[in-house]
Structure formats: structure tokens, C-alpha cells
Amino acid sequence: MTNSPIASRALGYFSGRKPGRWMMATSSAATNSPAAVPSTGVRIFPIVFFLVYLSLTVFLFAFGPWQYPVGNGHRLYLFLVLAHLALLLGYLSAAFREPMGYSGRWTTRRLVRVSIFLSLVVLLPTSKFRTGQIIPDVLGGLTDPGEAYAWSQIVRGAGQPFVEYVRILIGPFLAMALPLTVFYWRRMSWPLRLGGVISILGTVALFIAMGTNKAIADTVLLIPCLIFAAHCAGRIKLGRRGILGLAAASVLALGLFLAYFGFAVSSRDGSMVAAGYFAATHTHVDEDNFLVQHLSPVAANVLIGLDLYLTHGYYSLYLSLNEPFVPMFGVGNSTFLYRQAARITGNAGILDLPYPVRIEKYGWDSQLLWSSIYPWIASDVSFPGTIIVVFLIGRLFALSWLDTLQGDNPFAVAMFSIFLIVLFYFPANNQMLSSGEGCTALVGILILWWRSRRRVSSLRPRAVQAPAAA
Image (cartoon, rainbow, N blue to C red; front, top):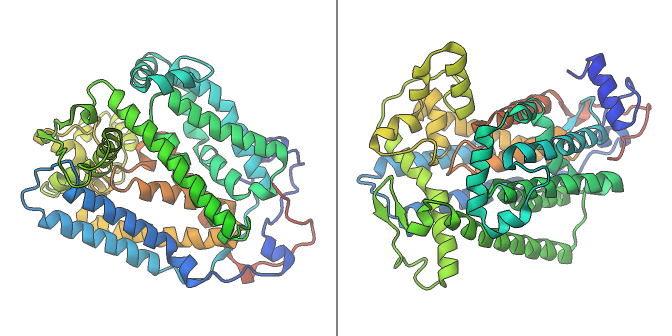
């Protein structure tokens, strides 16, 4: 890919540099001064954070306001304990290794420019396809998100999804725009900063106009994490006041998102949160639950909605654990992949094989409800095999964090960002692989990151030119 003459000319045009002058973008190699060794606390902080988060979601499932008819939960909770333990052990198996440097031929400047450029190019066509308007109707999405959501479904069903195919092809670049903008902010020129901000805010505006929460949640979660990562990597220097300011701004942004989230999910037609009734289990929300009984109606509504979104996927896991294993050979983990497999082979039976689909006989709805990441992975490798996959996820997550701390590999930063999304959505679904764009982003960036990793000691300074700032 990087050796293609056409790709060289195109990327050289976008970056404003002549083809054939790519260089090793490794600051530690160029300066012959290796990055500081990460402390133990910095190395293990991400896994501690996510184990606390995942344990909290299990706590909400067991003791939250939504009542799930789990008769004998021993198998469910044993599986979750093993999954969390596998994630921890996988992470620790790599957490104390040496961070790797970068030997890729894509400079940070080039990647930032191309990713922001492509993100801006597809932004307005995407808005037109998904909302029916070139400019996202942010005001309409804020005042009536339920109507905006319903209208978006209608518009997308009637339109031609050409832009969505384009987004699938350039998925890795689209996924890099936000993390590279935030992480390398101090190295970017003002025009690039402006383009990055427009790209990020434009995507948020688009999803508000669609009446959906995903891009807003992703942005609110990723930006503080990436700023913290840039601080730990020495790319951004935050003093005590800076850290406190970041924490305060993150809490404020999260609070604003939760307020919008509660309003949005309650305003949709047939909202389970508004009705207080979960049809899949024929149960009502317990408004006297100790977590909500002393809250204001608005705060209680937010917590009830958040609880439902974060926990009902575990009930799907509970149902799936009772089903026999039917191997799907690599396509069962993704809604996009198994649908494409059924279309290409002409075998409609593939559509009925994933665990979340097979439990529809119990009243589940695999299209409207979430099923946590575990049944999706298990559709390919079984539930015992899922524990091994989770171990590998933990290990790769640790390696991406270490390489991010080294600060030189932009693909590592993007990969770390993807792992953040994957782990935040663990209780809900296989987020990155559920769509075609997410599939190409994850697989493409994973390959680019892994192929560009090199030991810092094996890199030699090059006198061609200094590493280009973004």
C-alpha cells in the first residue's frame, strides 16, 4: 500500500510534500535519545480503570433498577469473572515490556493531513444521506431527538448509500482523525488544528442531527483519555492545575452528555426508558431501587436509561450461554460480516447462526437490542474460546498503550483509541466490528500498527531530515 506510486503521489499532494521523500518518523531515533521509561502506575492505570468500569456494569446488572429474570446466574457470573481475569492477565502479560518505536513510512504530518482531509470530504455527503440535509440540523436534533432519530431511519432507508461504501473504504483514515488531532495537537499547525476541530465537531453535529448518542459519547470519552495519554507520553505538559482543569472539563462534558442522553432516549417512539418496561423480559423498572429512589426525577431518568444501555447486553449473554456452539468461522462476530457472507454465498441460513440471533426464540431482538461483546465473539470461537480472545485483547491493549507512551507511532495512538472504544462497549456490543466502516478501521489500523513496530534500539538516526511536525 505504501509502496504504490499512485498512493505516493496522492498522499504527497494532500500533505504538500513531494513523493519519494518519506522518512522514518521516529523522534527518539532521530535525536538518539530514548523516551523515558513509563512508571508502574502509568503502565497499569488503563487496565485498573477498565476493570473498575466493567465491574461496575456487572454490579448495575445485578443490583440496578432494571430487573432481569436470571434464574441461576452462577454460569453467567463465573464466565464474567473469567473474562475479566483473562483481560487482566492478558494486559499484564505485556504491560512491562519495552515500548516499541516507529519505523513506518507514513509521517505523522501526512497521516494527520490525510485523515482530517478525508473526514471533511465525506462529512457533508454523509449528512445528506443520513439526515436528508447537507448541513446537519443540530437545533432540530437538540429540541426533538426522537423525531430526528425516526426521520434519519426513514431517510437512510430510502437513499442510495454510496457515501457509506466510501466510508468503508477509507475507514482507517476516518478513525484516525480524532485521536491524531488530540494527541499531536501541540505539533500541529493552526490550519490543521482548525480542520481537526471542524472534523470532530462536525461529526458530533451530524449525530445530534440523527438523534443518536454514539459519536457524542465517543468524543466525550476519548478526548480526555487521549489528552491524558499525550501528557504521559510527554506530548502535552499538564501541571497540577492542568490536570484538575482536565478533570473538571471532563466531568462537565460527561454531565452535559448524560443530560442529552436521558432526554434523547426518552423521546424516541416506544422508548423502554420512558415506559419503564423492558419487553424482552416482560419486567418493569424498579423505581424504588436504592440507586434511584433518592434522586430527582431527571437524574433518576438518566440513571435508569444508562443502566439499561449498559446492562441489558448481559442478559443476552445469560441466554446465549445455554445455547449450543455453532461455528461461524470468523464472520459471526460482526453484523456486517455475517450479512455480507450470507449475501455473497447466497446462504440465508448464515443469518440465523450468531448467538444473539438464535436467542430470539426467547423474545430477544438481535437488531434492536444489544448483546454485549461476548456472544458475538463466541459465535466464532465458542465461549471457552472467547476467554482466550479476551486475553489477547488485553495483551494488545497493553502493547498499544506502551507504544502510545513512546509517542512516535501514530498508528499506535489510533489503535489505542480503538481499544478504548472496544472496551467501553464491552457490556453492550462488538462496537467496532458491527459496521463495515468499523471493520476496516480496526483491521486496517491493527495491521499498519503491527507492521510499523520496531524496537527503539534497532532504529538508527537518519540524516535525511528531522521528523516533521504535524
